[in-house]
Length: 555
Image (cartoon, rainbow, N blue to C red; front, side, top):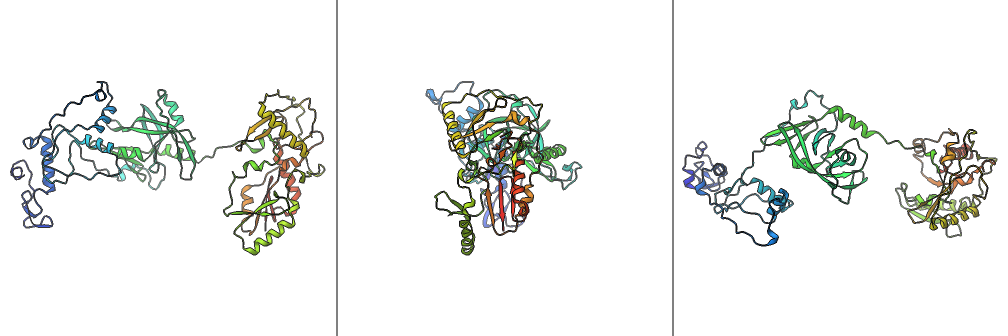
């Protein structure tokens, strides 16, 4: 060490002139020519020696690595055509040492969260040649190897390129992925995955089998779940011309509507070493000793943001073409809607076991007793079965099809049903006949098929396909209430009682010439809303709110 210090290769600092260069007052450093630390612990000296080692000026102080013994065995042989990735994995399993360090120990403490394979890759990248990297005993330093100095990344007003500050457009850029220029690429530092949408992948026309199956799901901040179709690794280039950088990125492929083609998440940004400044509409990353930059296309970013705010348009609800013949359609969906914020408990109202309802649990004991007494006293107004539903008097309200006289009647061809479906049709028809909702008739002109739909509970739902008949019926423009207005109208009330009409559509008779009104028919909702408005009349909006067959009594 002292011999190296007295060579002319070192660039000595200015004399300290009595200044203490450390905490150890009795320790002397030949390099700084001052007290405070030892020559062996001098960081500045070790840095210069490291550079001299890399340039070959200290070869006589470096011990060369001895050749490794040749490994035997069929399992260790590799063909000349082994891919670079396979060779990398082989080095990770059995690393070949390029030199032996006899005069230096120590180094940076590895992050325990970083895998050993990743650490091995970093070490391999930093090795320069067959020479060892350091020569000092007890040195606690990080070897330089071939590692180039990391360029300084900074942002100033010049990076804004004349754009007005204070704008909040998303970071939307363009990249080159798999030799395709891809626009509408969102930089999302909050995403834990790199996303490639299926529509984008299909337009790339990549070889079949490139996507690796990977079961799982992605979750958004609101808990929405998107299934993963697989993963694919693509070479992705950031930047332009000489100041660009290409890295392999592992994308998660999903099939979902979006205004972007790709989402670059934290894994890719960390691998690129990118720094994002939303204020300057710019992303920078190291490219050797230079800094690459990518700027946001503000016009595209604005269009993407506007597209993401658009709500997908759904078909109007009154164009349903299937008749649901369940006696109580609510049983299918009672757990699918929003649930009350409070817990509920059951209250027995009548003598029969099924005559129960549910009330909230946040009321006081006095309020609960009062409400229970009212419910028990009026339990006969609830429909507990089909026998309790007399139906609506046709003179009060009925439903007329008003078929266009120019429409040509359509008799659908009979569809074949399996044995299980035929048995389910037989049972459901018997229930409807027993309830008096349907009767046997002859229709020589309009004929519609029975459609059986499997319920989540394994049972069958019987529907009727009224597509052709609905096309021949004019639209009833009777207005439905505004959901927002109904919600506002119930705000501030102490008690809210929610009621759902039990098989309500089956209570309205058809016009004598059309003969029971099915939900799947066109204008069914308008007719039902007209009935509710007529029944509740003067108390509608003050004591009761009604939306088709859903009612709320407020007090």
